[in-house]
Length: 580
Image (cartoon, rainbow, N blue to C red; front, top):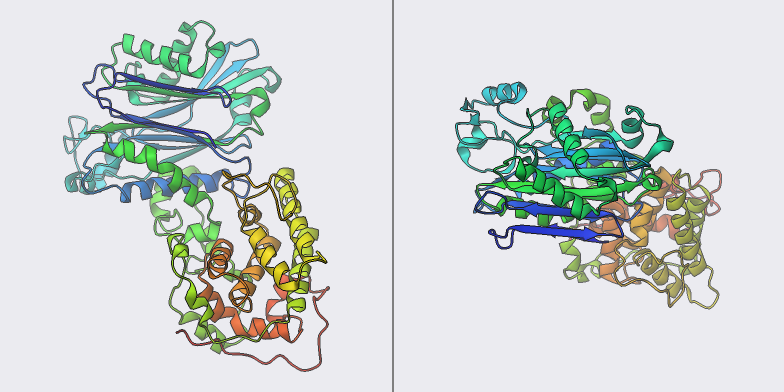
């Protein structure tokens, strides 16, 4: 997907700009009256259903953690800091803004005639030591505010970077404030009807733009931007790059002494509820450009890693909001994390799907509890995987039974799809149809069917084309079929994914390539195959091979429609194999 990253190169560069006409984005950066440029910005788009399984609140949590990770990952050699204003549009009519310090984001509403109707600052606060709440927080942390600066040094009270021990001990933090707005809400609170709206522009700026506002308040910032837009002739008809340039020039003419950066994304009237998701951020460095460049160049990969996690997998991270409830609730009194939310997450679980299953005996529970963590990371998936074939052999599979199982669980998933998003539902129906087509192919031997089934799950989504040996996968496609299924947050989807992962890690280790097994297991469950083998292995394999109804795994099926006919003899418990 298209993206733009603008960083100072060289730091003395006077201006930089960009325009993407297809996606209605443009930006302009001006060094202004500073000797060097320390601002950086980023804009990127996402696939249309990137956030289908996330609520706006979930996205806000991921942004909050993204900022924390960007701070922690900053090189110790970089002593500079940066403000941060990042806004995400989820493609479903919601704006989520994460703020640190005094960079700001706005929504400007135009009518169909191009008149500016209202400007709303999306961030409810800025973080200055002169703000009473921030001053109190700094004092409680043991810091002081001198001449409007933390410890007499820093003019902002929150930032990414600024790793001086004196500042961090004085209360400078990377805890973002998250604000969430629906476009419908913004419109309904304006003197304009939905039918009269021509477009909405998301405008993000550094504090160099708002520096000369009469006051550093939300209302004053809104009035300042609206006044500048009113000064510009027909602003809604200009390219986003040109409008950004004119806004920056007006701030400079007001005698702004700082770097000035403006980024604009236009949402047309027909894209307010179903537009392309995007992220846009401006990062105003201070003390150098190291921190702002770090954030602009790394936020894409860090945020992507966060939003692709399930809610439960996200929650168990050290820097998730569920691990920092007191801190998060301090800044979000209107959207506090409630105790019942914490209990529902179960952060001690290494697998978000574990809550779906209860061990059948104390010995099995004990065995599971005593296992060392063996979670795979994406980098580990590139390592040698030969150990997967060195485990104690499991019963040799009767491949026709495996094919029948895969077909039954796939049909069960397809028939029980319960997704409100019609686009995501259509994609998953295409994928499951492709999987069933593979398993029903009369020309393929069973072993080839199984291999093709898993390879298709691991393949990039083929733009609606069902399975074929020559499926025209796009070389730059970034979303695999299994990743699309993961966007379905229903239990039946989780059960399907866990079933195919356990099957791969247990009885198919001699059929599937080791790296494919590792990739499927990690994508489906965030577990290493060895962990699945130990916790689920022999019982699961024996029940399949003996054609019994998977009593321990009844969650994978409709219990009223067992996959296989039950025999008379009872299922014998099996102990998991020893870890090598």
